[in-house]
Image (cartoon, rainbow over the protein chains, first blue to last red):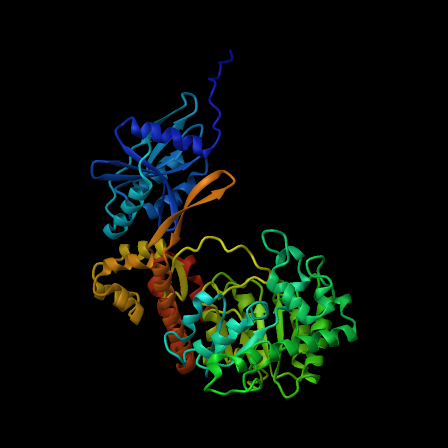
Length: 145
Length: 441
């Protein structure tokens, strides 16, 4: 007997997923800034709760590139996460992210919302002078909403 | 063996660096003819006031007319003013076609080529020397236009790639021969500007060497399109050194590598057998250059890691230095990374000041997908990176000119050993490839 497949929301763009990630984080009391410049890169989402700062890189599918971009964020963040809009979270992504302490936010198309697929672990490589640069950039940009 | 240190002029914003770190750092200056055509008075003043009377040559950039016209047009689709002006100086052979179609070898029958060469040499002789003679800065120096002429004149040249090699090689050789006939006591340089595929083709390279070395010129300029010494394989680099050594003819002729990095510098040293008498680079992005200009991109701050002999993105340098503990105190940084006067002044006893090499500001720019924020280095960060880079280049040329081949090879070996463990074999492979080439392995 054929099972009926769930209808999924088409993912229009990375920008759409960024919006969903912002909604997801704001719903859990994060203050959020988008497209924050840092060391020649642009961090898709920076989320703050209390004194903790998390950088989130958003990718529709190219998670390997996303993990590469996450590397430099370790110098400015307490936590780093990768948001992906793949149909499911590939085991190899889960494995590599876990090894690096990077969290995974999965945008689930079927429900048009984000969930934590893997929580990030605290990184202890932050370099305070660079963090101050990032904080200054966030102040210049302002928070979402 | 002395390796001359030349620097290529790029923009007036960088003119103060032509006497940095010292007034006599540079043995000569290269200026592009299109810049000369566009701003002769400004460049004349620059040479008189900012270079302490260093010798200069003008690259005639005649290859600009053989590419697709889009290569010489601005964003509005019009021929760039500097190229238009230059074409008019060179005459109808190029001015009749600029912006409409590329010139071909068939556009240069002997009489046309002769007129083109004479115009091109005349432009190089007078375009800067005449305004230099009349410049306010020359008031007390009292140099004549003749005394202000370039150190040598460059014969017009065209780019050689595999597709057009057979058409352009005879034109280049004839151009250089005509230039020698019309030298009027000036030294003539022939430019060997070719693609990596020609460099990698033994038969084609043999023809280049045979025909260019038969010319009665004083020396040569060498430029391989987009040859990145850090990523090039050993075969290509060996061919580059072979080309330099062949043209040098036992040290009797000068060979200036127009866009070279530390490999070219070493090739010119005892380690490389003196393959180049000099190497030129720009203040920025000048160690690799494509023949056809490409988009500039966003300037990312880069820090030159001395023992790697390469610039790396600021964030990558920071990751490396922080993970190794080299930013825990100033002494560790200077011992492990760099103790040039720029680094000493910038760090100023506090390793947190390394952030000054990477400071940036956010700029919003319009893209197809809408507005995006990009991160631009501050002028101060660019200046710190550039001054550090120029100090290290100065040391590289001095070391190459004074140290033995064994010491220079050992320096590559120790840099490779130090950074291999930190960055992985791939990131440092260029050091091992270079060492093997110079060790004859």
